Image 1 (cartoon, helix red, strand yellow):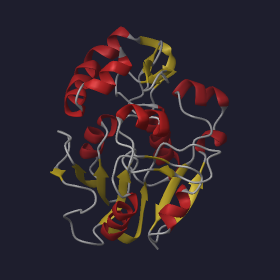
Image 2 (cartoon, helix red, strand yellow; image 1 turned 90 degrees about the horizontal axis):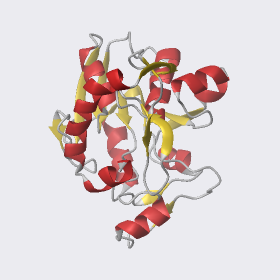
Image 3 (tube, helix red, strand yellow; image 1 turned 60 degrees about the vertical axis):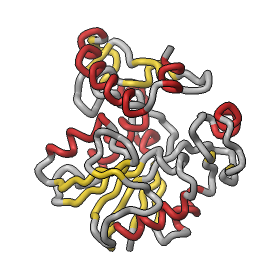
Length: 253
């Protein structure tokens, strides 16, 4: 049922429906086995989530709708950065529900959010041509977007352009270790073939171990962080985060 909903319900409606789940979910799934670090609430279980027959148990938090990767990113921001305390201008592409309203309320952040269609976004635009001036933002988040766009290098150039010198960003993608070179083929348009080749019906590429090089090709300096390996195993389990997923931190020097 989860897979069918994700595949056939339009994304703007999924976002609206998930807002309802955020209200009733914490009541239904209250417990103490898992904790969402984003809002601090605990649950007896997280919800299943996934595409293409690859449904992951205990993946989505009932209260924030956060997935494993969201909780990983939040912990990195909390543990390793001054994101929650320093005065920063943030560009948030494809804003995730679990972050959007929280970031908007933080007094130290001046947030601009953008997306091609999301009802959460302040601005609607195509990432290939961001309608904002260069050197504007201290921090940019653009997570699980680049696997959907026609030309990821053009989009990365745009993200680099609008980032301030000295700024940083996180541009997470579905990343498959063991694949040396990113797989992409613009001639594949059939949703089922895309799902087979790129793991999801609306993806146009599958990133491999060359992803940091793609980031560097537009000018970013890239630092790879595997936060899960620095945490206790009981915390990895309790927060429901991937132990070996890398975070690619991009700097504009």
